[in-house]
Amino acid sequence: MDVLIVGDGEEERAWADWLSGRPEYEVIATVLPRVEGSAPGPGSLSDLNEGLAIAGLELAIIGGPVESRGEVLRRAAAEGLAIICLHPPGDDSESYYQVALSRAETGAVIVPDLPLRRHPGVERLRRMLSAGELGEFRGLRLEVNTPPGERLATRVFPTMIDVIRSLLGTIDSLIASGDPPGSDPDQELVVQLRDATHRRAEVRLVAGPPGPTRLTLSGSLRSVTLELGAGLCGPSSLIHRDACPGMDSAEHLGPWDPKEAIGTALREAMNEGPGVERGSTGLGPSLLDGTRAMELSEAVVRSLRKGRTIDLHYEEISEEAVFKSIMTSTGCMLLLSLLLVLPVSLAGPAIGLPGTIYLAYAILPALVLFALFQFVRLGIRTGSHDDRRRTQERPRTSQASRM
Image 1 (cartoon, rainbow, N blue to C red):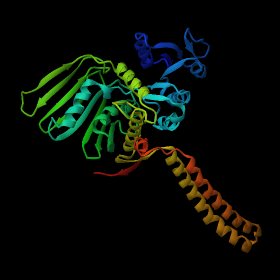
Image 2 (cartoon, one colour; image 1 turned 60 degrees about the vertical axis):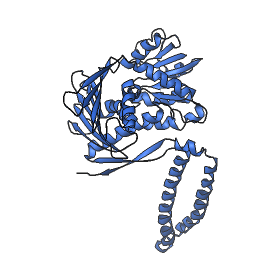
Image 3 (cartoon, rainbow, N blue to C red; image 1 turned 60 degrees about the horizontal axis):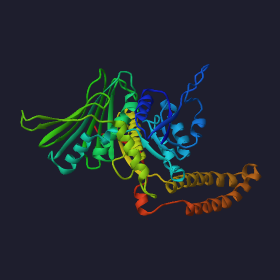
Image 4 (cartoon, rainbow, N blue to C red; image 1 turned 180 degrees about the horizontal axis):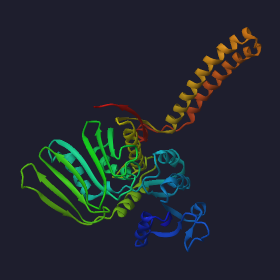
């Protein structure tokens, strides 16, 4: 499989090293940012269009500066490539929304770089949770040490929240606090979340020296902590703590390769049958998972700014839903315009403006044209019931103070 890598950061170089050790992949080019007065080295390009036009290209690793990553993702998806997108793709979820509606035509397969949900320790926690082995659910807690200076809400949180979603499912509400106060903390971020059944989770991000990442699942009978080394790819362990003191035990897990996990997710997505929402089966991560992570990051920023709980209500995102939204907005604007035009057309002659009476003649054609546009919906793909069930949903957020 011929591979194009976009970007030259630490993550992109790690992907290049990993791909070079696997014979099924061949990195044929790297697109680097244009530097004034310098020429690209062997195998390096400075023009994205030139890279995407390479014959036989099958896979693109989308990296580069986060600010421009979304546009690169959109252009690569338009070529119908298999894509691994470094996460996050930007400051919000708009980049994922743009490609979500177009990939049905282009055939692009998009997998965000969110491997932690596929860790064998996380899978063990998932089975314990579903089987009720720990007793009544008490809480889920994720503790992460991050390098100083990172933007915790918009850069680190989107990469870590996916593992919480993989265990709890859809998040219904959250509230966040940070240090220093404001919408962009860089020292500490604490986010408390609840799902539809009011199960509680907490994510704590702290800037400081490197340390283990801990994911703790607590029940009424005992708790289990998955402890991961720095970088998530070293040896890990499951620490079992019973309600009785002195009954703790540790189970050591072998090394884990997060890039191999993403490669497996990509192969699963490429093998899914036609008509199936990409990533709707298996462990993922899928484009939907990446979108959800970015939506939650946006909600965290709003919670930090407002100082309140953010409730998330989800609505369908599809071509039909977008059309309905546009027509609803257009209808409201048309109604408000009519409420303004009709009084003006009637009052104009009385104040010496006889020409305004002709404005009333535009009302009926405008209404007829609006009604005719409704028939455009008949040509929009809606899919079967099962397809609609898997269609992405976009959250509508509201703030509710819960003191």
